Length: 430
Image (cartoon, one colour):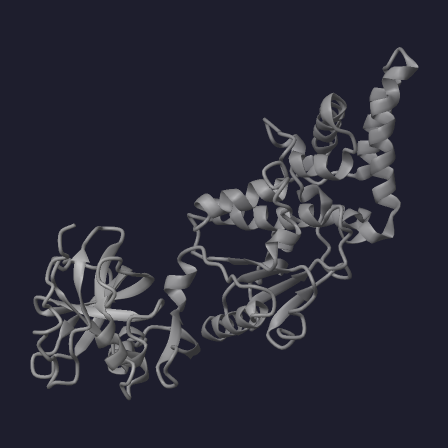
């Protein structure tokens, strides 16, 4: 077996920055996605004795290292470690490049850090430990609007921040095991966003009623007592999830009946009569009594009694939901007079009046329609972003707390909420 290159690299490593830093390894291989470096165990042990807490962690998984390329410092993150099988005093590490910064001529310190790498090192390039001063440059907020979320480990004074505009310009998630503070972190971030943008528009879906107390002073709180979501805002797919109780071929029969009667019910509205090509998905108000009467009329056209079963199922379900007070927040007859503009203005906080966030508490919503309520809210958010492109921009931030509660993994692909959140995830940064 051939000997690994640069066997004497550690013996002749030149000190950097007035003797404060010495090489702890060298670059072995470089690739676009991931690169490899070799650490010297003795150098890592010596670095561990450093008074600098950051430099003392050099070579550990999750720590940062740096290397000089021309007049710049490249910073990388250590992803994995493996003991070299040939030489027991060497450790091979997989690294991921984080970014680069300029090198100060007199002190060789890193400054003006930016994400991304414009020039990669060549194999054999010396590797050095990152210091606390380097981390201060890497994590400095540079004057842009940001949210302080804590200190960068293992320091106590290097602040970790999130750029608000950069974060809101893409999809993001807070992940972690139970009890690690996801909800607390979400509340902190949302509070800072509301402080930075008091006229913003944030909609948070809260499945457990945890956030109402946290945003009582600067948010609009909605639950089953005041949400008043008009049922006619549902599209056909969402209607099917609420009103259809069968599966297989019977479900398709029921769906065909519902589509025909729902379209006729919408067409009775004056707004529906003004639309040349009205569809079953159009958000046109209709009366639930009109829907049941149309189902009854269609059932009367059947020749055989056995053919009326689908109509009876559908009519019974509509009447059951209409009579159940638990569904009153959505299926009340009073909501037929509401308009989509009024509902969106309430929920999207337009105008915000100093309360830029809406907390939609769905903990009191019957479990069988929770996913439909979330689907309507998510679809309204997405459709608003699509259809208001030619108007003054009013971006809406949609926050889903514990999305797995209403998007079960085994049926997410078939549910309306799975469809709309999947679509938002793919193309929803509007």
